[in-house]
Image 1 (cartoon, rainbow, N blue to C red):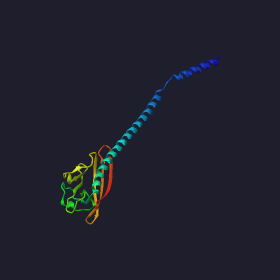
Image 2: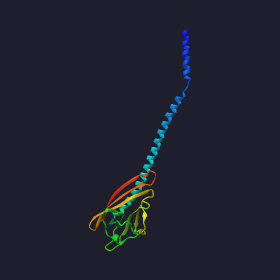
Image 3: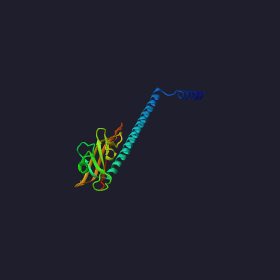
Image 4: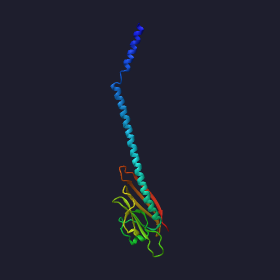
Length: 203
């Protein structure tokens, strides 16, 4: 008899414990853990989004600069008589002094050169100037055969903060130019970049 009572009492106690449910503390702990996990996951997504946006900004800048610099390098490589302009202001017209070579080991603001192949002595080659516009942060190109007006060669989303031209040579032959370009992508990442390229003149 006593054995049966003990068994029934134990079964009743276990049934009550099984139907009791969660306590308030257990629910609060579970909610807190879920909130912490949600915050960590959200932070990871925001970080991944920022990294992706920065990568896209860098790609845009590099693609644009590669195109602009490749064009400049090709033109300079097919040019001659490099003239480094160090006056601080680039004349919107071709000056007679630009026909002569001018080295600048300390750096200049622009470079002028004869472009293409002259057909013979006394003939006039096409004239080209590459200049830095510090007002809007762009690199500009001037070409005599295109009407002689400056046009931007870099995209608006790329801002040039520094553009220096170094021209080296011996005597009157300026045979090598070094372009140093620094800037940033004009968005909320402000990704900075610094590029250098060397060009040898066609002799």
